[in-house]
Amino acid sequence: MTKKRWQRRKDARAPEILEAALACFAQKGFAATRMDDIARKCGITKGTIYLYFDSKESVFKALARASIGEQLGAVRTMVENFPGPSAQLLRMVLSTMGGFVRTSDRVILPKMLLAESGNFPELAKFWREEIIEQGIALLGGIVARGTARGEFRVLAPEHAARLCVAPILLIAIWRTTFAQFDAQPYDHEGLIEAHLQVLLQGLEARPG
Image (tube, rainbow, N blue to C red; front, side):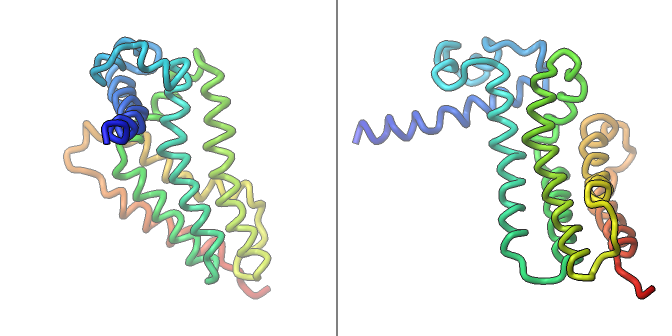
């Protein structure tokens, strides 16, 4: 029994470290955060962190994979198993992604990366390869699916994918930078709905 309790505690330690790191990154930024800060926030020694992560960069990557990466994986599963019209699929995917970025505290990660990518190009490269390119490929695949089925007009999928995701990025930047100055909370859900109406009308294949 004691061993099982220890195992459960050990399994929970890494997520606890990531939550502490997120709080520190949000407060201080990536460059100013030290492993000591994360350890103090988590209530452990710095040496304990190194049992799970070999560097601060590794902590950031694990945090991105455990939040945004997992979200993309769930959306990918949704896409693979969806039999219906591509417009409906695209609406479901963008609504899901929009809901995540509207409500998740992980929205601080892209802002932090944009602010500090010049000093940490390895993290920018990681984000480009594991987050951005996966997202663009997923959305571009839906557009290509719609085109192949005669549902969407012929457009370059890589361009259409970037148009799809633009308001998602705007929401992330707005929440983490400008929302503090809003007299009233902005209706990000309404923005996603307005974007979908314009986007799907623009993508729709028309005779001739």
